[in-house]
Image (cartoon, rainbow, N blue to C red; front, side, top):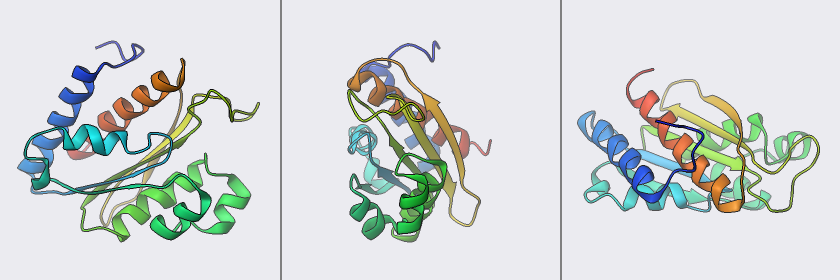
Length: 170
């Protein structure tokens, strides 16, 4: 599969269904913590019939205040590193597990555009974090190309692919 192509709805649906199949087979529940995708990961997941057996909850936290209140992101983290950072996404994914009944979580934070980018963090910069309950979080930075929708679609696909890898034990 060409990972540089902008994923269409069918591709996102197929990825979400695969994630669901793996989680359901392992009797695991998923939580999402989303910023730049605005709940799109949760929407893609809940488009799958029967997702209530493996999807616990989704938290969309755009503002600093919401990231702190819903996900336990420390104010110091946001002040020192910004919302779009490795440190923030790691706290987001950990907070998603603390504040849910899920056994696995994904978190995303980034700059979808068209504005908001800086020389250090241009539009298309996205951090994604994944974590199992009781495990160590993992985070990866992506630099996606395209307009706002393209960045968000690529983020959803990358988040789901990372969940697949985590669910498979990779």
